Amino acid sequence: MNAPWTAIKDLPSAEGQEVTVKGWLYNMRSSGKIHFLQLRDGSGTVQGVMVKQDVPEELFVVAKGLWLEASVEVTGMVRKDERAPSGVELTVTGLVVLQNPTDEYPIGKKDHGIDFLLDHRHLWLRSSRQQAIMRIRDRIIWEARSFLHDDGYLLVDSPILSGAVGEGASGLFELDYFDEKAYLAQTGQLYAEAAAAAFGKVYCFGPTFRAEKSKTRRHLTEFWMLEPEVAFYGHKENMDLQERLVCHIVARVLEHCRPELRMLERDTTPLENVKPPFHHLQYGEAIDMLHRLGSETPYGSDLGNEDETILTQQFDRPVFIECYPKKVKAFYMKEHPENPDLVLCDDLLAPEGYGEIIGGSQREDDYDRLLSRIREEKLPEEAYDWYLDLRKYGTFVHSGFGMGIERVVAWVCGLQHIREASPWPRTIYRLNP
Ligand code: 4AD
Ligand code: MG
Image (cartoon, rainbow, N blue to C red; front, side, top):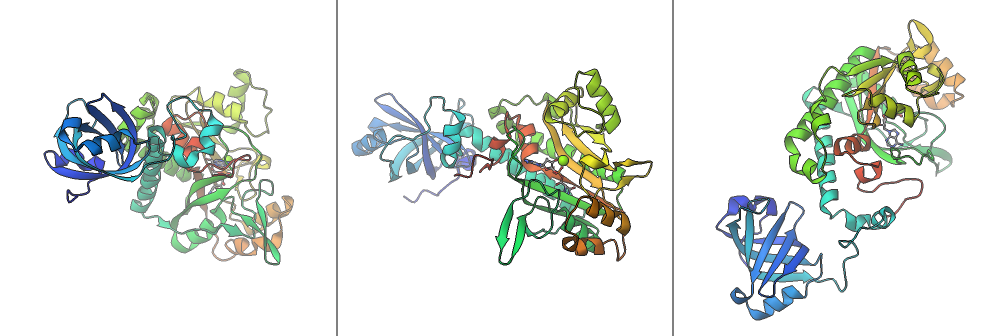
């Protein structure tokens, strides 16, 4: 075969030419005289039409014997076809079977339960729904990174193995590290703060780990977090950056991922609303609103998932909840200048019930206050020597936040559960595949 190997997505510009497609048999229908081979190669899908009288007889027989997901090289002429989603189909002239499975593909057309699908995640990723989700995930990450890069942020990666606790002693994965204990990073933030003192505007982006036994549709034990950290930004500038970033991501997904959103049957109207200004509620206002709506969460407590859901349903776009009580938030957050029981922080809640997608704060930049917070939380002081140094040598107002990628993907795609937002979801009950 010397017809040029062509990606399915590029077939519309190869109309009238003979090409080779390398991929998998996604579906097949036969009329006796014609086989309709649905082919996919990861870039798209195309229908190959094999007419009995136009190909050698043995080829027609071989095609009939293919199981779904056989790997194949198909040669054919690209022809215009108004009915095809991409506008073209292939008139098949040649077929090389790379491998024909020996039995039926496990994921068939019938409905499978979620556990079966998750057990077969390695195969499930081939389905058109999962392809749409992964393409949107790719777009979200790409746009987030290019937004920051274009705005002068430097990517400075943070370690995954660490001797210091990032967010709180509960929810840590601990492991033996030669003669000491190490933890899997819950956040890259503390390192991003050091990098901000070196480079000004930075971010880190990597996998983070939480050993929380949360069985909600919002929690994974491993997830990817994008964490900008900015020197000389206060609480307000921090929220402005979050708003700009989220608006940019959603606008670009709407611009580039229409076919994927359609595949997911995502109603895009709520996404079109994601424009500045977002709503803002102080923590106390949020509690009052929740009480009016029937929640019994007392003033002083963290908001539960249910509370977040209720709040987001009151607004047509994302909402910031600002300045939570100090005792429900992490040790590094800066005390509120007018109320020592509160901290200068924000959670950004996504609409339609999705809840928290970002957690951010201005950081405590005073050496003595930070040290007393570390002591109050009974964190091992020695492990924070280097972090305290940042307050000793040229301390500076600074702020940052963490955006959970899977939370954003779940919201933008309109998923019922966060597990579909990760190619290889990790939850308390799932470590495989
Ligand atoms: O609010 P969190 O815990 O904040 C931090 O870790 C800060 N150190 C970030 C920073 O300021 N640099 O987590 C931030 C975000 C949450 O808003 C959520 O989107 C996501 O990370 N997240 C999770 N996503 C999936 N599963 C979990 N178990 C998550 N926990 C947090
Ligand atoms: Mg949070």
